Amino acid sequence: MKHDNLLRPFPENSDLFLFVAAMDATVNGIVITDNRQPDNPIIYCNKAFEELTGYRHDEIIGHNCRFLQGDDRNQKQRQLIRDTIERGEHCSLEIRNYRKDGTLFWNQLVISPVKDGDGNITHFVGVQNDVTRRREAEDALKEEKELLESRVASRTKELQESEEYLGSIVETIRESLVVLDEQINVLSVNDHFCKFFKLDTKEVVGKQLYDISNRAWDIPELRAVLEDILPHSNPFEGFEVEHEFPHIGKRLLVLNARQIKLRGKFKNRVLLAMEDFTDHRQVEQRKEDFISVASHEMKTPLTTIKGHLQLLTKRAEKAGVQADLKSLAITAKSVERLDTLINDLLDVSKIQSGRMQFNFTEFDFMNVVNNSIESVRETMDTHQIVVTGAADKKVQGDFFRLEQVMINLLTNAIKYSPAAKEISVHLSVLAGFLKVAVKDTGVGIKREDHKKIFERFYRSDGVQFSFQGLGIGLYISNQIIAEHNGTLWVESEEGQGSVFNFTIPFIK
Ligand code: ADP
Image (cartoon, rainbow, N blue to C red; front, side):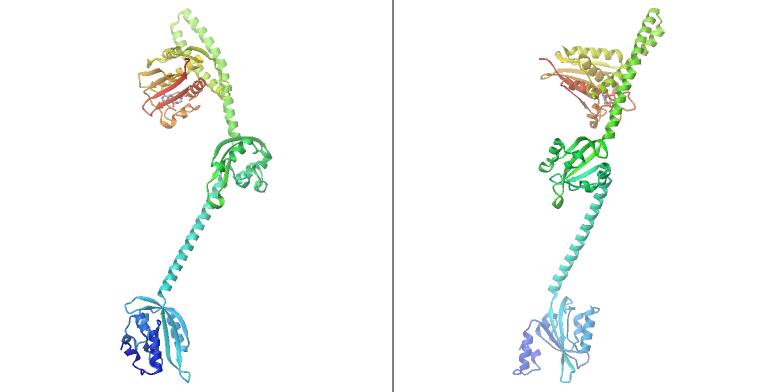
């Protein structure tokens, strides 16, 4: 019979036989040790214990239970077991045990002493339960929890750091910053705002922007653009506000605003940045005034010089003094150049103040072309000017201003192509417009400068020190062409020469 070994000590019809059979049927491993014998040997184990440990019955009986601990002998639970046995007490614990094949299992162990009539401990009963799965699940859960906690901690730290980082940027910025909610209420302002407007945070936070600073911000146009930011994600830049502010007086501020792109708690916020342009504008104005005054001041003595130069030239012609005539001609050329420069500066200040005057008449455009080419040929004889195509149309315009544009483009083409012998002018008639293209094979212009060269005083890095000039000719030309409802533009590559084109409408 299968359980022969286990049941051998008990007769088949005894109660003990039934008890043992019952124990053998349980899923928990059960061992009984005999405490009266040296080293407390196992005298009984059930089938579940054999299955749990992988040892056979004959490998178990007679051994002390410690074989279950393998080499893992430093667990604190061992001491607990020893103490329990010594004191003859009951104990319950979980311990790492090892099967015969060396694999680990977590043993939930209950040890109970059995005493005789005199109170001496005769046996111990050990009930074992394999809780490895539960322990593994618990360990995995613990690990996951620790991982999660450490992630949360590091994320919190990151957030704190980025908040501090952002905070320090916001506080360092030398611009006033305001955060607004959907109703344009002020949620926060930076340090610079308070210092600049000489206001306390309490005076502004919580109020609608339009209600603060003597209602400086209550401007219909500003309301319209501010209130359009959130609904349409529509930022704005460069909105100018000039106002007499309390504590700080009249100021010119330039405003930029955009939606703060954050999810969750901080969504639907507007960041409004205010830059003080008052000083900047004043410096600009002083510069304008200087150019205007200086060019006017220079113009008067130059006119006198020109008059006297003509007088002297006439006298020298009469006297036939060739040497004097030569010197006077050179002087006249320089005076002419100075006159052009001063006139250009005067034009710049006229454009700036909107005082540039135009005298519109009707004329043949080819006359402008021919006159300007003639005048450039007289003063610059280093290059041939080759003309192709035609623009035989009448235009409505300012003859001298258009001539000024042509002369500027032609002299630039010659100036910036010192190694060339030739420049060309191509004329064409397009749908409603005349087109002029002045082409050279000179130094060319890099792409990023194609727009900037039409700004006043802008000169490309490459030409700054190698070619004379003030950087205003194209600025003036551009204004003149715009005034004629045409456009002026450049096509060029650095080192590949340039083509300056302009169009103006002709009379049909
Ligand atoms: P200026 O020639 O006195 O500097 P302009 O306003 O006429 O002033 O031209 C502005 C700038 O544009 C020049 O400084 C130069 O960098 C560039 N530029 C103009 N014309 C040419 C050209 N034909 N070739 C190369 N660069 C040019």
